[in-house]
Image 1 (spheres, helix red, strand yellow):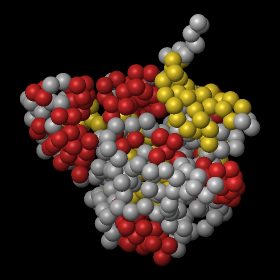
Image 2: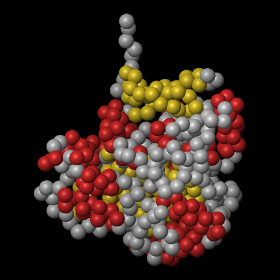
Image 3: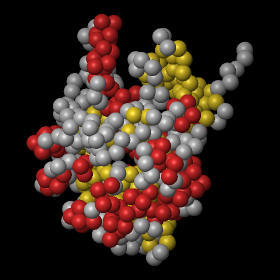
Image 4: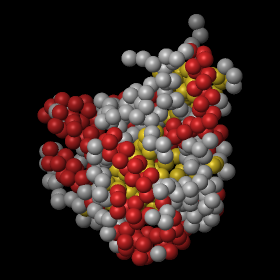
Length: 475
């Protein structure tokens, strides 16, 4: 009998990229790449590239950890994932990072925007609404790990500092502000006031490219000088900052190494987050057939271009290993050394007890999990790293500060093309909906933002009619 020209590797549930109805999907390995093949009865077959590195894709299974549940759930299981978000009891990960959108408005109208923000889009949330959103996530999490104040552009909110003041009264371990940097560039006093919210406070600064044409295609205008001025002010006050890069193939992938090297020279910058564009919202200059980027392509670009990180330095993040990868480095005595130069991941996973097998040492196991936990930010990181280094032979743990830490995170949000219910259930980056539900970032932009919920209601009605009122329920 003839063999097929691929290896059948796994099976999952996805959605049709056209109608968003659930479809069966198989994961195959073909020509040293990983693909998802799915078929909709209405719209036919689709073949989607999932990973360009087969060994890394397989390795993600070695970094799974038991799910961490929130203290409470917000919706019931009725229609099945992804149609019950809120969080429902079938969700497999608590909120490592929670986005609070305090406004729909923005001082830009970016051609690439998952929320479709603009100067005239939507409205500002009231202070009372925002505090209710804070309290919802506190009820879910107790002491939430990371809260990110976002929008739109949050700095245009008329009560921006009043909201920050309220946030600092809540039991949040770390607070971030997600911004395009325009206000920070124009108003040094604004940055000076922001610096008073440290410690456990950070700026999440949009930083997509050095090139004018790329910035125009992604943001509508050349913002290079704006970003540099914002960084000048942030450096002046050493306000902890993460540079956030939205990536599109053949647009800014070649700049990854340059951005990392630039970030390392900035006093205030603690790391770079690399986010492949999610096919959602406003995408004026984006062709999903040619412009989509996989996590493994980004990882390889970091390895090839950074001059710092190697294959063993960028590892899956255990809370959602399919969608998150991270590399930590120490900045010591003018040198930048990846943490994995001290720790061989294979040793931690495979070798015997006397060469540190964290699977067989619960205390060390938990310390490794803590290091690669996106919820560990701010002042908690140095203590975590120092405690880990003390466990390792022949390693002297320096007295670390947050300024000694540099990390690269690859954060891939699944969309209607690569949707995998297994990944959706493990999403740990969530958004508090204006009605109080806590929704994974991935599904929020597919089903729950603005007028998309009207179509979702149609899909839910179809499920009830076709399968009955118990659709999606299981033990």
